[in-house]
Image (cartoon, rainbow, N blue to C red; front, side, top):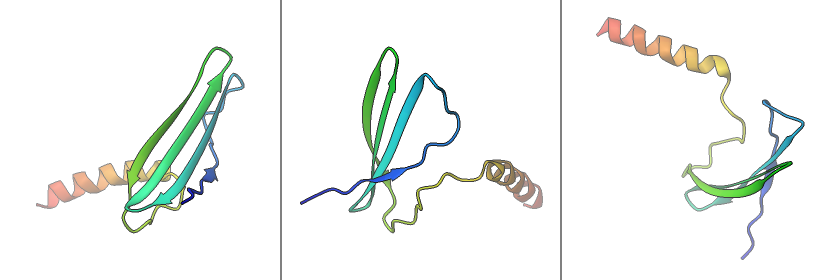
Length: 81
């Protein structure tokens, strides 16, 4: 059996003194996420599992304005009920 990782693009924040690599692999029940980072003084690797049974995550993060919309909707719904 082989695990195939898809490299994801790491956007902001970017620093010239630290580098990060982010990849994901489709596994039963979700995604296996691999993070590798390195700097001048140290580095490390992490593996984590992201549950997504239907593999709906497209590899992108949510828009930053979604958080404000989400908060607004909760306050609106609270006022209605």
